[in-house]
Amino acid sequence: MTSAEKLYFYPVWLRIWHGLNAIGILTLIFTGLSMQSSIESSHILAFNTIVKLHNIAGILVTLSYMLYFFGNLFTPNGKFYIVKPSGFLKRPIKQAIYYAWGMFHGEKAPYPISEKRKFNPLQKYAYIMVMYMVVPLVIISGIALLFPEIIIEKLYHFSGVFVTAVVHSTMGFFISIFLIVHLYIASIGKSPLENFKSIITGWHHIH
Amino acid sequence: MLPFFNNKLKHTIHCQFCWFFQWSIFLAYNFIFDMKSSLFFSVALLLLFTGFYCEAQSYENAQHHQCLKCHSNQTYSFLNSVKKKEEKRLMNPYFIIDTVALTHGVHKQFDCTDCHSGEYATYPHNGNLKLEPMNTCLDCHGGDASFAKYRFEKIDEEFKKSVHYRVYGENFSCTKCHNQHTYTPVARNSSNVLEIVDYSNKMCLSCHNDMKKYKLFSGHDNPKLVEVHEWLPNQELHFQHVRCIECHTEVVDSLMVSHDILPKEKALKKCVECHSSNSHLKASLYKYQNLQKRAEDGNLNSVLANESYIIGTHQVPLLKLLSIIIFLLALSGIVVHSIFRILKKK
Image 1 (spheres, rainbow over the protein chains, first blue to last red):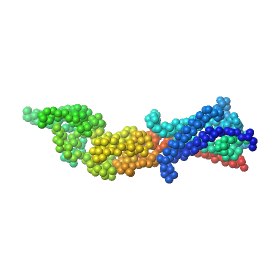
Image 2 (cartoon, chains in turn orange, blue; image 1 turned 90 degrees about the vertical axis):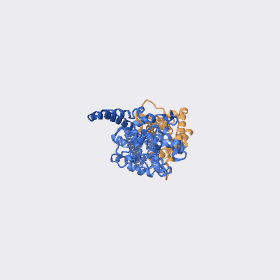
Image 3 (spheres, each protein chain N blue to C red; image 1 turned 180 degrees about the vertical axis):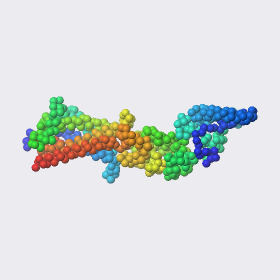
Image 4 (cartoon, each protein chain N blue to C red; image 1 turned 60 degrees about the vertical axis):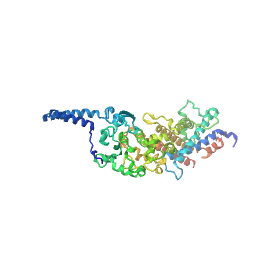
């Protein structure tokens, strides 16, 4: 294996963010589900502890999001998130067809990873949606729920807290779905564990 | 039961002053004219005066009400028979009646002396009247078919189990919480949960947040509610959105509002008792028929907000269903995809 086949894809700050985010999000999903279904989980963790854990993990994810946001703003990593107007829909569709059909029929990936392209179009869209729409919404609604007295009393005839809670958990749900798909897609590689190793070491192999 | 008390009080407005006045006119008329044939006119005159004076006796105009003209004011005057001069004093604040609330209360059709001794009609009042026993709510409401739906006997039975009764016995009457002058059945009639909560909590706070009243009754200082509930997250919001009795009573299915107030050690302290699909609130705060009715109406508000005490999306049935469908679709997509991957690898 030569160094030309290896790309240093994930700088330290990004791996720190990704690690903190992973721990935080997993904790949030576990505790969030536990609160939602109000499982009387005193034999695992008491409800109050679950709420406290959820709050702490929420703050952790918020702080790590800052790292991600400013990291992308001030380092070259941000350019991987730029969407080209040409083939706005065609490109992700092509990638989706590859996942659903092409990859089982010996076709080559239409948008292979390179130094200039870290994400395939579908991946890019998903990351933009999650990281720049869903996560900010979940953070804002989460902060609001931490300080419910700042939430407006009524939104039309719905309780403001109620609407915020529904937005928060809906976004949380999308993040959970994203996580499942994210983990699965990450297993598509030369070997299922290859991508997981990359996000820890920072180096990505080009095949 | 007191002798002047009529258990089957109907909508009557009467007052001793009016009757004395009317009868004296009636008797004087007969005495002067001594005409039996004028009896018809006498009765007509009587009715006229009855109508005229009774209207003046209504609560609507406190200034013209014999009792309220003093008892709605901060001060009262009386003729000091010893000093032979008129004196002005401050009214005991607990004897001042909120006349606006009075006209909206459930007992608005009764006059003061329907419940209080008729002797209060003399002024200045006889001091001994205070020492006479008052009527209790059950004197009217107990054993009466027209009040059966309110289950006063069951309320009494539950109340006798409560910490209030066990500590203070018969001294703790219904009126300690339910102001008989102004009471309105907000819990039954209001469709606004916040209003129900506010009305109910004010009953508790009228003593538990009132140093004088609390000490008068218990003999010791009232606990500081904010400190005692410090463990409760978002205390203020909880106090606005749920009633004290949600956690501090034993819920009884047959009663609209539980009356068995528990000792503080037995109060609910677990979040999940309310914040769960099997919420305690379903049996208490959200029990009211009006809310059930709203749920049946199926309007968007009730469908969406009915279970807002459960944390998360699952409080909206539609979103719950959608989330399960999306989750299953994602999962089955992954399973099918990985099966193909495994098959193609071989």
